[in-house]
Length: 347
Image (cartoon, rainbow, N blue to C red; front, side, top):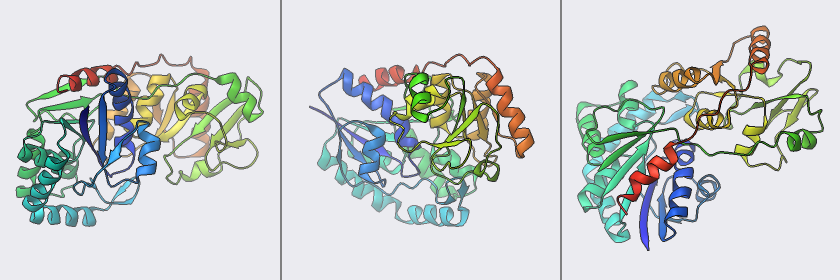
């Protein structure tokens, strides 16, 4: 049995979402692999995202950034968090190195905490970092780090035997062993007729999915404008011309592949999954998020998405414009096989 320790950042479920198709493919190609997941996220919710069997074990504190809400960084709390890590860095790394020695993994995969990477280096365990971003560049963009902490984080990331950058990604050019792979996404099956039948609408009705990952929707989408021939679908949708995703018996990738348009916020997971499904999208811009320019340029370059307008009249025009276009060509999530091939060299 090959044992892999997988460190999953506690900064939302996007990091687990990036790992899910990679771990599933790795397990299918190497059935003797056993995963031990270390994350501050609740195990039951992690299991729903990852979709592979795993054991759990304590790991180092990895919160990425502390947030006021899912899109607004709490800079003061995040700065205090990194200052505390700086004070306790050596102790935390030493303690985690002992935990890793006890687990005796063949490889540590991090998405994308740095304390576990530093601990693996101290314990003599090979490690791979895999993600579309790193907390060093993100924290520096918000001016959260003292120089000593910058040096420690950079050394921790550089200790990884390999940095696998998932397209689209922050540059991370400072890592000497960085390798870029294609986009990583779960894929679904288009079940358009089944979805229309379940929702009780005409097969010709255009279905617009509103999905913000559980965060509060922009005001103009709380009561979206009534559009002839359009059904709005969301997890909190109620009223004429709206339907709820609650009770829809589809895996989310199947649902995404079956709708005509997605409205969401800028983020790797839904961008990559929409691109893989060929589903056009409108996105709520996140101008302060360091990863946003790379994500938004990528989705525009592939003809998948456009920014979400800020008033109802412009929203109606934008929705109609995307619905009237031919469906975009899907973007193959080639990064799944490419990442698994790189990871397999360490097994």
